[in-house]
View 1: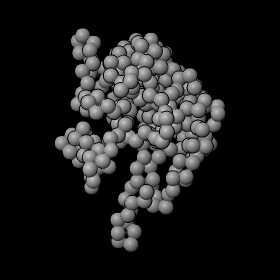
View 2: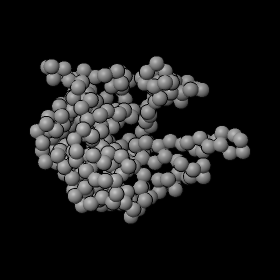
View 3: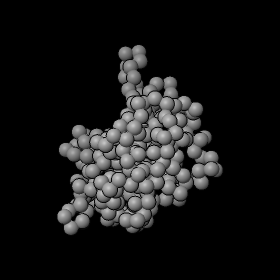
Length: 262
């Protein structure tokens, strides 16, 4: 596994997974079951692995000498050559943390720099999606500093400045293997949840992703993903690779039978 940033595949797509840890004794065993033979697996390894961490979790993997001590999840990815898609939460413990981070608060800077120092020791590329679903206004209001309504220009500006500040600290730390994934949730074009106003600029983003879950049995792939693809495949975004960060299909009961649409 190379040490540089993750680029798009030469052809086809990368296949990723989040595995329910209850399938096995832990998440790693669950992934291995899914990578294994049918009926529970696809008999193929996954290139990407989606994993979730809170604001201070990753810095907590550094020992007193500043050496990365990966947890069981990352250790499994290292052993199997997977690229972790690290879903890194915003700081919900600080009111208006986007604004605080953007301002270069020393305490927040220490967390960011320690996180960068930890991830640069990962023996391969890492995809980092800080504050995913930032446009879902029922979540993370304390980070954005809003009340869950239509975003103000200050909300947009704070998020962008915080993202750019985090990116800058990672570059200063030499975390050149970290690929930055900007990843809004599902949205309505022109609605309050339209993510365009949160975009931090092509120079600060490597990949663009989206979260879309099929919430009706009649939903189709074009209906669910067409708007995102149309918007972010535009030339103004510099040909960034596109990713489905999270997706899934719910079960539905029809004619007294459980169905699940593809």
